[in-house]
Amino acid sequence: MAALSTAHLPIHCSKPESDCAWKPICFPAKIGSPSLHCPKKLVLTPRSVDEKISDSTFSANGPVPSAPARKKVRRHTISVFVGDESGMINRIAGVFARRGYNIESLAVGLNKDKALFTIVVSGTERVLQQVVEQLQKLVNVWKVEDLSNEPQVERELMLIKVNADPKFRAEIKWLVDIFRAKIVDISEHSLTIEVTGDPGKIVAVQRNLSKFGIKEIARTGKIALRREKMGASAPFWRFSAASYPDLQETVPVNTLAGARDRSVTSEAHVSGGGDVYPVESSDGFTINQVLDAHWGVLIDDDTSGLQSHTLSMLVNDSPGVLNIVTGVFARRGYNIQSLAVGHAETEGLSRITTVVPGTDESISKLVQQLYKLVDMHEVRDLTLLPFAERELMLIKIAVNAAARRDVLDIANIFRAKAVDVSDHTITLELTGDLDKMVALQRLLEPYGICEVARTGRVALARESGVDSKYLRGYSFPL
Picture 1 (tube, rainbow, N blue to C red):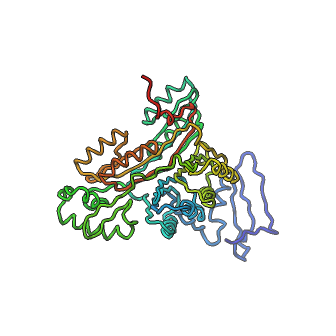
Picture 2 (cartoon, rainbow, N blue to C red):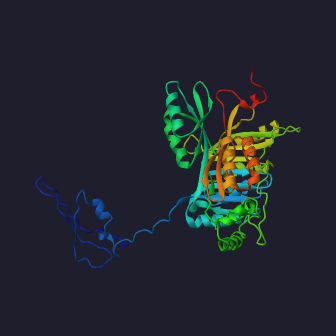
Picture 3 (tube, helix red, strand yellow):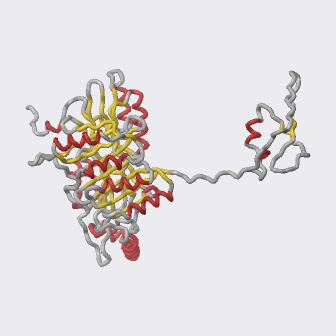
């Protein structure tokens, strides 16, 4: 853009009179041209000053071109299936930290030899595709999927502790019934509530309860499973047909044969060998043990003094913090058995709930090391305190018409919910402690488990001081 020069030029400004409008200011202009014989008139009014600045009057090359449209930033849900080993969480978090991505939520269902991560981040399509490619290059990463563009079942679990004065307690219970939540602990001045649903429901509950005063929040982060399609083209059709041969009679033979060819050619190159995403060999149907019945069992007591410690950490919600925190565990050789990351009760803070095996002395030293981090605000070891703990699991089971009724009967006993149904699968949602998760999984294994997504443990200290875990071994008085 050419410069506007008025140096050494006389400027005549007339003072406006009371009965007349503003008068123009006349001066010779030099706008990118050496000729000065053609005067320019610029009319200045109080209303038009801002408009003239952005107008093309001062542009020698015509109107200024508009800036290019910015790429759309949206929230992505990434599912990462890996072989579990020490330091895997730190390596995955480091991929996002090095690129400046802030992980909004992270849910990890860990086992002795495999793990399923569900990560929620915000970014553009192109950059997220690069992140997915970088994750696939990591050692022991078997499958990476972006579920954002797929029909999916998404759930999140939240424990929220609110102030509950006696005069407002009836209104709080009314809101709990509306959102189909549960009260898991009650004291004289507070209530601890368990809420399960999609992220929109979680935010709505938090907003409605904020007027009473929120003391603490522990969120698991979102987990998601792809909704199963109908018919022989579905990903798990062959796995269900292997367990229930009568399903093959419900579709034409040529359709099943075509689905068999498509399944082998399209899924074999992305599968990790048939653990959570089973792919049968082309020579016939085979049934694989999808998950171990003891999947995710934690160490409660050991003769060596080891036990599972539940740590609750309050950290800054900024990129790279999760990588720094998990790096403390990895450098000292601690194996993280459970991890849940979600937004805390205060804006700009996140709560990390993790389960780590160790002795009381070693965990005490670990807590001291965590307190040295700049982004760390609070670390609490809830192991020796009465606390309410919950986990969330989505499990997809292979069924036919007869087995579907049996699975639903088992789900009713465990108070699980059916959240997705197809002609050959059913997806259940279950919340509870670890023993409840393992018990349901053992009962459903004979039917054939297609895939599982689990969160880590979230926990809040009980204000009532009552620990129901120690009451299970006592008989009720007669």
